Every structure is written in C-alpha cells, then in structure tokens.
Amino acid sequence: MKIVLFVGNLNLWGHKRLALGLQNSYELLVVVEKMDTKTIQFLEQNGIDYVGYKERNIVIRLELFLRLFLRPLNTNNYKFGMLRNYLMQKKSNKTCFWKFLRVITPKIFSSNFIAYILMHIKGKFEKTIIDYSPDLVINIEVFVPIQHPILRLKKLHFKIYDLIYSWDNPFKFHFIPGLYDKYLVWNKFMGQDLNSLHKIANRKIVSIGGIQFDYLLGTVKKKEDKEYYYFAFSCGYNAAKQEIEFFKKIANRLYQINSERKIVARPYPNVIEPLVYNELMDCKNVIIEKVDNGLLQDDKTLSKKILSFDKMITFINIGTTMALEAAYFDIPIIQINFLPIDLVYSQDKKHRPLDIDYIMKNDHLDKYLNIQKFENVVNSFDELARIFQRIEEGDTKGLLEYSKYLRDFWYRGECSSLNTLNDFIVTEYEKNT
Image (cartoon, rainbow, N blue to C red; front, side, top):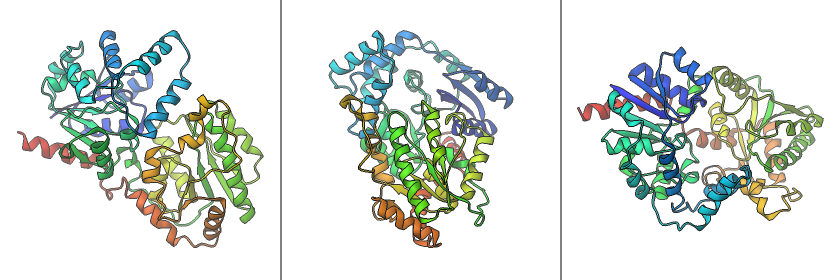
C-alpha cells in the first residue's frame, strides 16, 4: 500500500513519529513544504523517500486572496489570534495592503466554496503524485499552509485523510474544507468542534488519540522522589512579562507555606525575548528550567521532559497542552483561572490583545481546562493557597480526578495513536479493495 504524507515541516516530534510509523508499515513518500538541513538529515537517516514542493506563486496568491472573503469563526482564538498576528507582523507596504484587503472584502464565502474553486486549478506539483499513484494521501491540517495541492488531488479522485493535529485547531483556523474523506482527531469532543464550527460531517470524523503524546506510553511512573512544584509558562507577546509578575506571586504563596519547597519555572519556549525570565533568579524558591526551542523536539528533549514529569509534586499552568502530558503521571494539576488585580496591562488599546487576560480568553481553555466542578481549577490566591496546603499535607486523593479527566482527553490505553491509525487505514483499505 502506498501513502503520501503532506506536511509543512517536520520539526514537531508528532510529525516525525507519524512519518516513521507510516514508513515502517507502508510504501511512503513524504512531501515537505519547508525543507531545511535537519529535515533532510532526518528523512535520509531513516530511509524515507521525500520530495520538496513549492506551488506556483500565482496559485498561492489566489488561495490567499480567496481566503479574504472567508466567513470568520466566531471564536476568541480566531478573533484575537488574527489581531495578534497583525500586531506582530513587520510593517511593510505588502502587509498593509493585505490588511486593507481583509478589512474591505465582504465575508461571503464558505471553506467549501473556496475549495471547489481551487480544485479546478491545475497545479505544477500534481504530476509527481499522479506518477507515484498512492492509495492514500494524509494531510497534516494547518501545517500545510497552502491547501491547493491537497484539494487538487481530491479532484483527481485520490483518497484524502486530514489530520487535525491539536485541540485548539478547530477554534483557531477558519479554512478547513469539508471535502476530504476522513478527518482524524484526538477524541469525540474535537470531532464535535469540527462539526459545529466547520460543518464537517460526523461520518467523516475518526478519533485516533493524539500522536504527539505517544512518547509517554509505556513510561514507568515513579511514585517516590518527588522534588518540586512545576509551573509551565504559556504566554508570549506582552503577556510574557505579565505572566512572570503573576508567577512571582504564586511562588511567594508557596514560600509562605513551605520556605524549603522549590518551584521550577519552565519558560515559554517560543517567547521572543527569552532573557525576560532572568529576573526570576532573584526569587528564593525558584529554579529556572533550561528549555530548547519549542518546535525543535527530538528523543533527547522528550526524555528530559519525562524526567521532569517524574520529579513533579504538582503541575501548575494558565493554559498549556503540557498539562495534558503531566496528567499521565498521576500528579495533581492546578489550573489557574484568575489574574491578580494589580497586573499592568498595555496602555495602548490597540495592543490589548497581546495581554495575558486576552490570551486566557481562548475558547478551548474555557471549554476543556477551566471546568469549575474540579477543585483544581482555582479562582483566587486563597483557593490556590488551600490547594498548596493540602498537597504539603499529602492530601492529593481528591485532586487526581482532574488529572484523570485531562489524561482521558487524549489517552486510549497503552495502544498508541499511531497503531490506532494503522488499524483504521488497513480496515478502510480492505473494505474498498
């Protein structure tokens, strides 16, 4: 069986895991949009056939132009995300022109309408795929920035599976056409988001778990030798400094309860100015963890991550996927759902979407993390202090229900997502041959 995997880049561990897994089971061709030295090295070391692609500029511009007419998502992830993108873009005549077009164009098109137009435009790359003649094409949604090649292949009657990589993608990205054969998601809740926000038919949605979490499966979890509390920063932009100020107050509360207890601060890997965290060196009970670029994940990085999880007494965050990973280790997860009243926000109203309170408004956080029935979701410093006190006294039993809830969001037993996907591919292939 022949498979073609379309991916924008191969930096993420989950993408590499998928490529390796498919290579072991099928005849595979990987099509990569962003080809760099490390990507080529990874593909060649593992004997994976690959080809780089670049669509014609006129087709790229046409797709981007058509998307200007696309009806926006009614979500905070999309609305504030678009504003943040504009604010962080370098000002140029080109970006100002596209911003002007986005403002004046009527929002009258659906994703499917745009997809139908793009499907009928011949691309320069399709001959490569036709000659390869795959039985299946897998597209990692969002990480392939231009969808025209995939849509064109659908027009040419190739079977297309669209992998929705992360839980915030349905809330965040508004161009997800409903014309592909199957949509691969973590669970039924992501499927419901795809259906309600993008009108993807339920019969096309398949739950396979989260491939990016497969590295955790089979890990021997240590019950002893827990060393520290752990806070994972999750904000960039202006919000990074605000989150640091907030964290100092959290660390101080812990110090008041137990002055000997350490709290590890994990900087947000993709923050623009990583040196901003250096001011935490003055905090008596804080250890700053050294992290690599968040996108450049490899086996060594992930092994280091597992060691960190093993030593955690509890995991604290405002809103990060890492909470779902920490939940696998049966430790209390503390979800922060409030902000100090004395935080300083942007004075310029235009830049307010870059502040922490706007980032905390993301829909997937409210829907899936800030669940008030769990006492782990804290709404004040007093509630946080009570949780700290309970943990110090060893009273964690009631706090682990939230961890189970978060773990079950992606966990399908010790059967990996990749194996689940392989079983589904084989079953569907046998049904149609």
